[in-house]
Length: 396
Length: 234
Image (tube, rainbow over all chains, first blue to last red; front, top):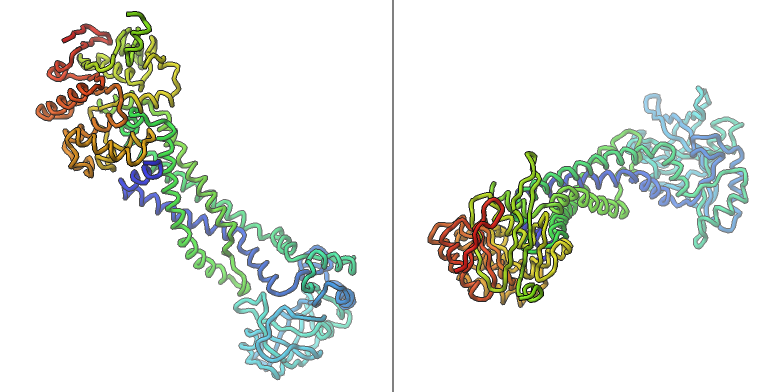
């Protein structure tokens, strides 16, 4: 009987203790799995949204994230220059503002207001009507449409707010041309989009041509790096970021908290797992000292009895680890739902995202747990004095 | 008889062997300067009062304990020079142990308990099966092969333990109080079985308090205070 079979029989011999160990590891493993999904989940989710929006590169005035730093002053010229590049399929400039949209004196809603100009695809999915093209046309998201009961052809009054300073800009009448789903929409985030020129006019003449970000999509066959090099050469005063670099900026800009929290919680849960299995194995080994000494007397090597204990630890951790995956998956779905209820979280953003790397790290950490937990009981077994133990068993 | 031939005939030879246990109240001399040879096919009993060093001597003869001083030769090789692994191999292939408390593994059947040392010695599965059946039949438990120790009587457990000890065809069988946990009648049956094992060629050393069991041996060593006080041959 090999050590694994022997360990299995030893576990089955005490089903209550084995079940306790396996369930304990399953609970701890589920938490560990979730912590690993959480540590990178938000960033993976955001990267996915960036990729799905269909744009490879983002161009900004400084190294600050779009909307958080100074605007580009002549975005129209930059868009024209980038649009001429051979690797570029689409290029759009976006400016972010806020606006109060009114249909009547009592029916109004404050929206995230974007001005968009350029050529090619847009980063949203049109679900009704058409794009806003004229200077007094407006595209709204579903939330805005539902709140104000808007449809293509509806007329609304828009009062823009273009800076953080108090303003009193004149309102203008717009016609709704369509309804769209935006990639960073939250469940309750009214959004509206017009042309860059229209937003520039609403914000004042000095604001014409300003944009927070230019988004660039490469042609098929063109690599992101090559397009980035072309864009950097075309607009050398601006910063060019790939989606990957963008995610890196977001991470360094505060999202690393999730990783830090998950690292702390991972350490705590693994410590509990090590203690739990160590206690169970130590109790089990101490109850079998006589048998182990007898096996040694019968010729079992020290390595063999150590292997038995290691296999026992591996079976507890392995069984618990396998159970922990579906358990962790269910828990992640529940926790993700809770976190997504935080106001301002976009619909498509997830905190717990499956990554095969997380599965690998989970398995690696559990293997390390099994080994660490077995250290003390292995020490007892390896250093067991055969003769003294046999003598004590008789005297005892 | 010269030394070389003496060594060749001996399975194990202890020369001026002592074993001292360090204790808080001071060292205790469990075995004190014993010289002893166990030869092929011998039937030896060691008796004496509790604490006289019988089991300690047996453990040293079985290579599970090492002398504090003196020389212990197993098949002519100095046990002190053997690594832990080599001593394990000696025990596995050349020594069989029978314990007072049987120490059968409760989660295994009688047959699996007997197979265990064979598996450890690398015996193939068909050979293990054959040998196990042969041994269980030998100890009269062929019909109880699939029973766990909890389903066996004390005498039956000790029979299984003897079968297990014989699994790898040892040259030397060491039994520490093999009838200590059994009633007189069952003890008689175990004693008869051990006699048969010896008659079939395995050297036997029994540590016992049981006068009747000891007197079945051809050689009786009586110990006191760690020394062999008297040796009788019959």
